[in-house]
Image (cartoon, rainbow, N blue to C red; front, side):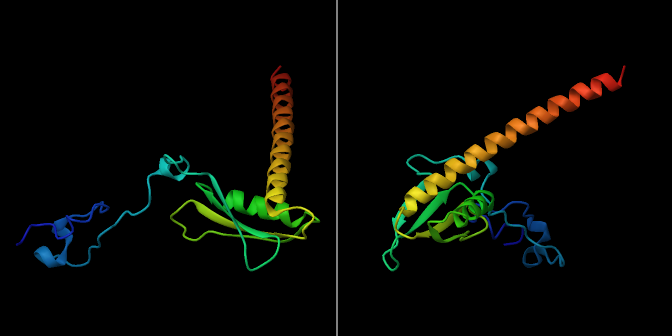
Length: 155
């Protein structure tokens, strides 16, 4: 059946042209593009009933847990890991992104037992928020000073 799209049943095909398919009309050298990446807004908006963070205690290792962060990526994963490894009570902290197309990462934390993994992650988050607020204030102050000094330079 010449002219029919053999990939019509695939819902995620984009940019496909049947006239470029060598099996349909003999044109050679073209490629089919399949867009399987999620829409941009799906990367950060939580779906109905979806949780931002899930917590699973680790049964094989004492004082350890696995946290799954939905709709987040390497940016937050690496920040949290770096903050956690600086804590004196954290023995191990690492994160993993299971698949690059999905904005999810898993954070594994093991503590010395004086604090729980959950308490360590909560404290790391609080510390990061405080650091970022301080960075925001410093940046805003410098930006305003730059604007003021630039206005005087024009006179």
